[in-house]
Image (tube, rainbow, N blue to C red):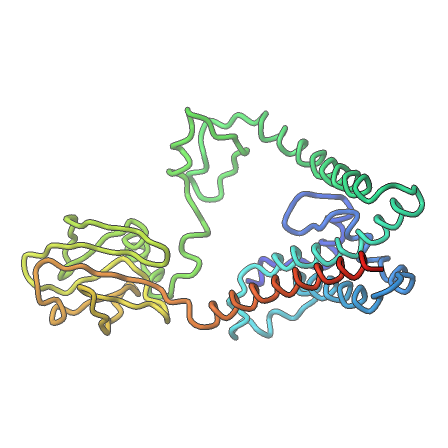
Length: 314
């Protein structure tokens, strides 16, 4: 985790240069960060709300950098936050709200534009300011003509746009990060364990089996397997805290194999033809967040409708 955190000065520098990468929020928003506090006291109406929004932007900017002591939380539950620079998305969101206020006032009062025209102009300027740097990067990628994808670790090849001739090559390249990020230590301790999980290899009494019908559903994998006799079944599903297993519709207590995956003892498999369902239950916290989100949107809609009605009555 610590290797992915950049100093605050680098984030500010990348933003000032309008560099397109994960450590930049852009020139306008970093100016808002550095000088936006000057305008907070001049905002009419809900100035306290804008102060809170500005402080949230600063907070997430600090959280995304090495200015926050992440090393103190490396071995705690916060250590699972793999890439802290993603907090810049929240920082950019809050700073964009602050930046939009003076822009809107400028268009409406100084230039005396209509509301619809001001919004349209803002959108056009925003899209154009995004398109210019992206076009430059796209041109570099478009002009690159590598003969192969990265297959050797530490080799450097230019980027390439996929086409019908090189599309399949992307599946042969070495992937250093991604598919094993959230594997337990037992799954990545040995390369053969890791490879067998990624390839979806199923073992019955430590022997590879292939006569399997697999169905993928949201948070669920269903295996239909025919065994010559009841055997210990080792599935390529990493066993997490909220993982559950059902055999022929009945929930069972599974074990964890040496490769960190679901292991079903032969004593549970009482028939040759079995249907195994392995799923992940996200827990009550997940559903609670969904309820909170729905309620928040309902409150926002009701509040907006009431304000519009009150404005029309006045």
